[in-house]
Image (cartoon, rainbow, N blue to C red; front, top):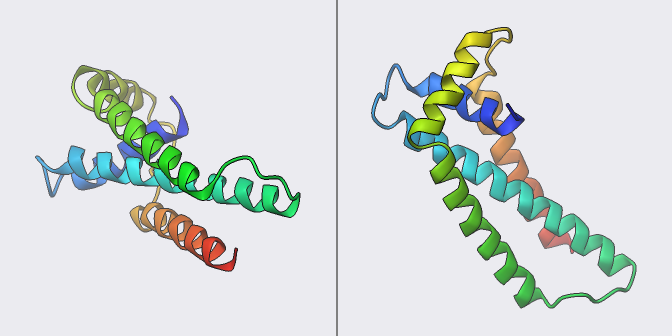
Length: 126
């Protein structure tokens, strides 16, 4: 399993006892937001690097269009991957291992918020 699967199931298992029907939706929104914010952060770093190298590869409008299309692709990929039978198979694999301690939920949400804030900060500074 990859790191995003582990993060998804940590959020899912945290909210499952209290919000039985909404736990999958919350975890799905979390992992999609995290992946999109990491994509935004890496795109901003590449853009800043290319600006420093005086290289013009793509206009700002085209970059935002590409980012939105990539986010839509990530949404559909996660929706298919973490809904239904595949989620149950991955959950069974995770439950059979049980070797690691689950991540703290505040750490997981802090990771998402810090990634978004870092992206916004770098975007404003550029």
